Image (tube, rainbow, N blue to C red):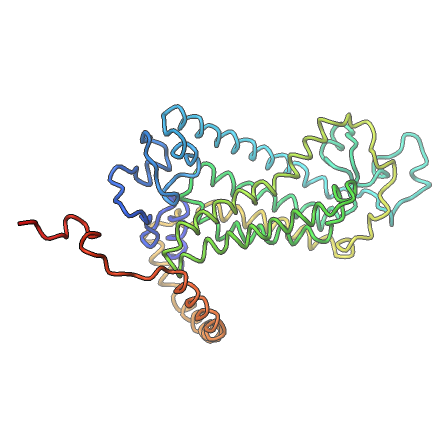
Length: 392
């Protein structure tokens, strides 16, 4: 069991594995193509050489596609690093806001007219607003929020930080790590969109009068579906690997752009407004305290938030790499009985699932067979000169 975790961590960190070799679907051998390590680390740019998509590094795609010159390679590399630093700043800013979501600010349910009639008005009378950390530091005022801080804002910010961490690792590590990251990033993106639904009528949908949040969730879910197809499809049908990689690449791009709309908009609000007063007035929004998540105990939201943080730290720590082969072997032997029991318990469920999916698998096989071009025997003139008989 632990040896599998160690192997998984190894493939995550290096982006390569014995069972996941780079494919070459071109009809001609890529004799001058750069190796996977050269592409990912940008050590030896190859001038004017086009490389199959699935062998490129994520930060060098535009370089190998356009000019491939050392200047272009350097430009693209530092563009990726600049984006990574920007996303890292978004992570820091979101983490700074999470402690202030524990403030006991008033809602429409708990608003006390008598306590808020004094001058100056206590800050808790305003309710929750954007940039809770700036509000606590310098009294910054902005648009108001009505969703539960403990059950929505804190988990939302933490999951956003984890998504940003995935994007940073992909930008720095290149295409070689994207497929490994996708097994965790795509489910997280789906849960992230699902968590937005209870508050989808909040800002900016409330101000714009259109379901902007719902639209962003639908776009993210569509990208997750496309990415999952690109990730899992080639495992069953290797000939679909290039198209699957292209689908997975654009799924990452769409999810990254979708998830970063909120941080970019937040900093736009910070720069656009002076922060002296709130456009939504001096009292909490009428919807605050009445949303779906406000009826859930706050402890549930905080538990999810800190478990998400711990899970993310464990994932990115590559804990399997910290185990020496000898230690991993001993621990694997010690946990072998438990592993066998788990495998035996899961066997009936796997058999039922396989039987349930068998008709769908047959239909998919038939569809792929129809899409696959029929093989025809080549005429002597179409054969390679090497295979043709020598002329007398």
